[in-house]
Length: 74
Image (cartoon, rainbow, N blue to C red; front, side, top):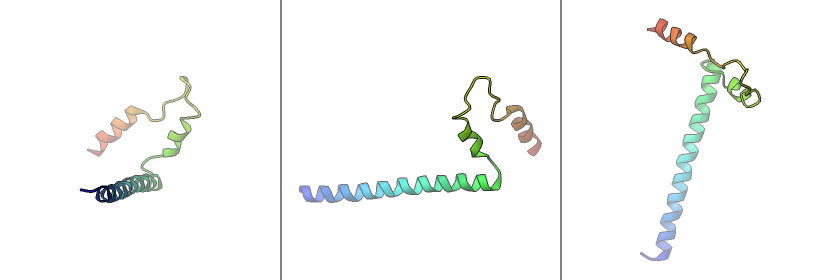
């Protein structure tokens, strides 16, 4: 193979790799948006964690409640 063919293959590979990363990123962002809209999860409280990260802060989620809810659903 000559250099021109290798550069062409490299260009196509780079394009498809970027396309796959783009699709994965935007599908993840859309799924987060959809879950936020439905009320399944509140992502804003996780973003506020950056500003309120003291050791005395209350936990974001209570694990006992989550376990009880899962058991009730079964």
